[in-house]
Image (cartoon, rainbow, N blue to C red):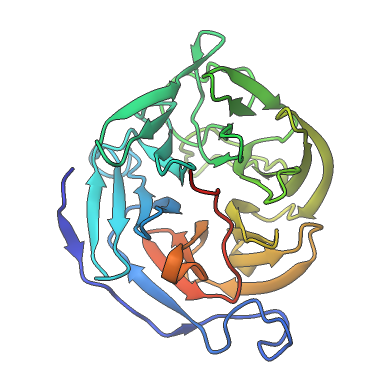
Length: 336
């Protein structure tokens, strides 16, 4: 794996904006916490996740129409040294990433000359395997984000936002990959699904619908009609089936969220891209807003650290990686 150093750590004192008082009996953001810029040299950051050893990985989506056909990168940020290095390039146009209970790196590879598949990498050997590449004999549209339950089942979303490839699946859905390798379409009514997360009690599948009304690059003359912009909750059965329960938050007609993560108490930390309230919004499992962290750029995804950084929230936004200290422990799969 390449280990090219990209830049030194940059830190800026950007105060978070909170709903509620940080002096309350149960603050969400650590009192006095500041948003820190850790890295700002990417094209478009996404899919942040934290390995069992505390290293932070995130996708750098390059978009071939904008960057001279660069092939995407996965970056690695070291909280101990503040250095950001290239972990993998080309990335298969990676987007969402997660670590499973065995510490393996699971990646959703999108379209735009990407893999359009889900891969899993053994972090000890560096070897990867394709765990889902086709459904009904056809490629996925553009795997976007993923989550893993405590039975080892992987849930991933499959919309299309960019890329020249044919859209071959007839619906923008949410799929489940079982440990035996079988792939199942479990959500068909989420509009254009993007972020996805399993609740700590394993009873809810949260899905973000971010329907921008388009499947590729637009000209100035095009004005797509947006669809659902919402945070949705589905009842998740022990067998892994999902049944729509309710809309937790409706952002329409503004832009909705992108990615999200849950803390150990089940609260949702959601990256909202609406220009009027861009930042990370924290909600209860019922959709009540608890806190708001404003970000300078539109955020794309979030992840909690581990170990010494278990209360650190990492945020990808445009070409940057940020962090902020919270009072909540992130939820992670029990390690095996």
